[in-house]
Image (cartoon, rainbow, N blue to C red; front, top):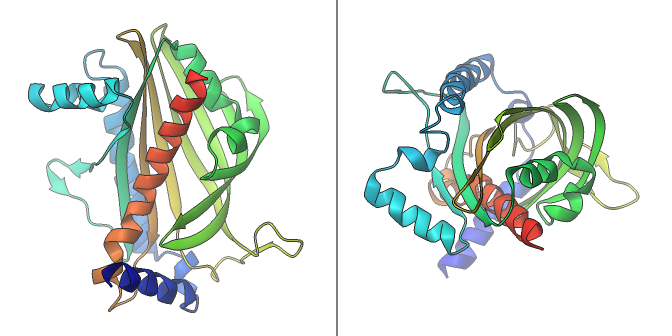
Length: 272
């Protein structure tokens, strides 16, 4: 009965009429999110230059780190909610749902260069990262900077297809590690995806499933293989009053599932 109720609430949300605010976050929301990203960028820059804490698992307690390493060694994908704080203070992002997850996978007998090359092979992402990513195309490359398009498909509780334009920057500070920052510069919801009449919803008329998306990838060759870490920060529409208390937890899990799916897909492909 509970499962049917959650599905029903999901259908209600999908059927809700779009609101002007759905695709146009209020200025206060964008300002708070930009501040959150600025602080996250600062923390990420300090971590990628720290040889002892390059991965998030390196900052865990000995007991917790041992548990995570055991799971990774068994082939699991480990994903956890994380948070950026401003000098220990929580950062409020009003008028929206902020999602921040970090995940890691370990790929034995694979070099860091192989993992980086897979992420940079954007024309094959529709094959490698299906079913979350169904299409991708490299538009340009200038050294370590890439621009590309990507289509995401959400199929958990809510169903949506999203076209994105994205920019990626990669760094290879040493032979055993690399990192990248990828930002979506445009996000558009697609109506009737995969049909002859598919079209993008105009700005201001979508459901606001995804307003902003930034991801941070890290690659570290260690322990006879390569650790791949993905940290994602995204912003979506707040849920309507009366729905959020039941549906919010399931909807908030969508970014987590995307992170886990992409890391698992990368591991499977590299082990082929």
